[in-house]
Every structure is written in C-alpha cells, then in structure tokens.
Length: 510
Image (cartoon, rainbow, N blue to C red; front, side, top):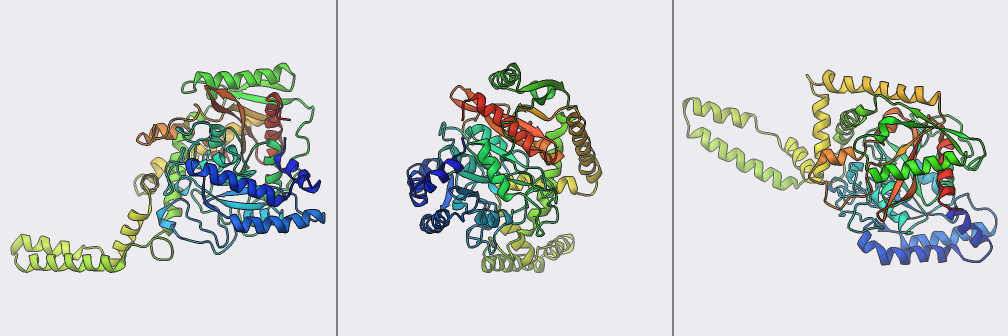
C-alpha cells in the first residue's frame, strides 16, 4: 500500500494534518535515532514550517504529487545551506551552496525534506560502518549492519523515521541495504535521473534512487526525480513514462533465472526464500520462468573494483585541502618543514664526502610546504576504506598496469553488458537474490575487505551494464529480511516495478 497516497488522503480528508505527520516522525527520530544512528542532521523547525506551507497548498488543491511524503536525503546529495559531508572528515563542516537537481525536483513536487542520512564515506562500503558519524544499526537487529552505502536511508525507512529516502547506487548501495533492512530499493537506469549535485564516486556507475516501504511509493518518487537535465550532460532525453501505470497488469512476465546467481556462495536459506517466491508466482501464472545464463557475471566483482576505484581515484583528487574541505594546520606544517630543513642543513655542514652528498640529495628532495599540505590534509581527511580504494584505483591507472587492468576491465564490462542484452531479447526481467546472505553482525567483515566486497556479487553487474534494478522484500530468514532482486533493460523501470509489485501481492501488502 502506498504510504504517500494514504497520508495525502488523510490530510485532504482532514483526518490528520501534515504538521502532525511531521511531528510524529520527529518524535520517532528523537526516540530511536540515538541507537540506530540513521540521521546525521534533522531539520525540525524548518520541517514544521514547510509542512504548514504544503498543507495550505493541499487544501487549495494546488499541491504537487509528493505532498504528504516526508523524505530523508543521503549525505552525498547537495542541498543548499545544508551540510554535505559524505560522512568524511575531508568535507566535515562543508555546506552546499546549491541544490542538486533531485532536491529541486522533490521540492517542486512538494516533498518535505526532514534531514540528512548517514552513509559509508563517499559511498564506499557495504555495511555503513565507514562513517565519521559511526555505524548505522539495522532496525530489525541492532547488533547487525543495515548494509551500505545507503545504510542510513534504508534504516530510516525501515524504522518508520520517514516516508521515503534518497540513496545512491554505484555497485548496489541502494539495493543491498534495502534487502538487509526489508524495504524497497530502486536503482534507475544510468542517465534516467540527473547526477547534478551528487558528489561523485564513480561517474559512469553512480545512480540516485528511492528507498521506500512499497513499490508504488518507489514509482511515485522516481516519477518526480527522473528526466533529462541540462545541468547533467549524461542524463537521458528518453521520455519519462507513468511508472505507476500498469503495476498490476494481467500480462504474464517472462522472468529469466540465471544459473550463475544460484550457485556457490549463496546462503541456502536465501536461495530457498527466492526459489519459493518465484515458484509461487509461476504457480499462480503471474510469471513464466526461463533458465538463462550470464556467463561473464563471475567477472563482475573484479571488473567493478578495477573500474570503480579508478574513477574514484580521479574524482577524489579534487579534495586536496586547498579549495574547500579539511585543511591540515598550515602553520604547523611550515614549522615542521623549517625544523627539518635546519636539521638537515646542520648535518650537511658537519659531513664530508659521500655522506655529504647523501644529505644534500635528501635536502633537495624534500617536499614543498604545498605538497605536504596535500598529503597531510588527505591523510587526515580520508578514512581507511576510501584510502584503500584510491590506492587501488591509482595503481590500475598507473603506467605499466593500465593495459593489464583498466583497459582489460573495460573490455570485460562490454561483455557483461552484452550478456544482459542477449538475455533481455528472451525475457522481460531477470530475477535473483539481492545479496548472498542476510545482514551480518557489526564488525564481522571490517578487517576482511574481500569478504565485504563479495557481498556485492549480485548487484555490481547492473551498474557495469547501466541497467535498472530493484530489491523488494521477499521474506524473513531467522528473523532477518531477505530481498529479491529484479533487473531490467535500460529504461524499462516499469517492468521491474511490476515484478516487484507481484512479490508484494504475494506478501499481502495491499
């Protein structure tokens, strides 16, 4: 059932007011956010003022399509006058001077923005433990992760701290936390939603999308934020359809089931939940299941972590401690440099022969104050995972390794994209698990980056291919949510939304 529509209806019928709705969310945030740590800032008074204005437009019949929707924003999307830190020390205290296109469109649709949401630093993580604000906790079990990097967004929606949230998805960062937290998470086709105002991680992968409690609400939010944007040259001019139309059409969907998504590494309980839902749909003649193969999907993790880190290395070079963001103490750096030079000069003056030459070379090769400023600012500003990915990306782009890694990965990316094109010539959507397991315990994988990266095994391929994907709650396993993922061809969000709606109807969600 659409929470956006039901809330709007209650307000229009004077059963409630938008101010009361906002106050109820603020009360829940005050009560639960201390433990969950989903919100990093909350706009209490501003939200109440905005609620009053939208309420008046609703009463006059002039309100936009998202009036009644209280939405949280991932802290990687720029919002004028609001802190946009990307959960990183390098941007701590930075305030955006403009609205991202998606923020502007939400405001035009009369959505009410209630606060900023926690995340993995710069979107790099699968557990929301890489944040200067501390880890986010899963509302279903506070000893477990909510997924990442949009963990704050997923946890806030799951805990009913807001109606909906915006997240970003570079390799699964909307869909995987949606699966872990038992909510709907939609990654649109690359280019469907403007990236203007999204702080870039990997530009050819990044997508902004909604996290909601229902497929209908995901469609409604996408409807308002999708479309071409002159501020983003990579946004598509493809017409935006009515995403809510046909959600419950009777036409049988052809669903591809890739053998590669149900093999080694998938928890048997997760497999059983996904299998059960698909067979139930087939039994009710809602879908036609067809075995397919995506032969190059086994290379998706390696390909993703070569290409995405390479783009991250380039994109994050702008954070240098000079123009904006964290800057190391310049006076302290200059004093350290002066003391080191004096010490080296003293050693040089008291030495002879080869030793004197060595001291002279060391003195000549000392970093300038500016170079030290860059190094110190970035060392202090970036967290461990971001540094790891910058170094990986710099390595694969370096002379001698570019052809062996980056260039080869681009060729494999093309093969992965072709696998999907071949599959979509035979089926409408592709189904499988969103993640190989349910939410794992906090801290369980922090010191094992390979295991952390493998958690994205079923989500990265969609970003490599630029197609759309959705995660929808499919059931509960040992008290924790399991998500089913549907992938669709480029600009075929309607099909994956419809597939997701079929799962909701099985689950009895209106």
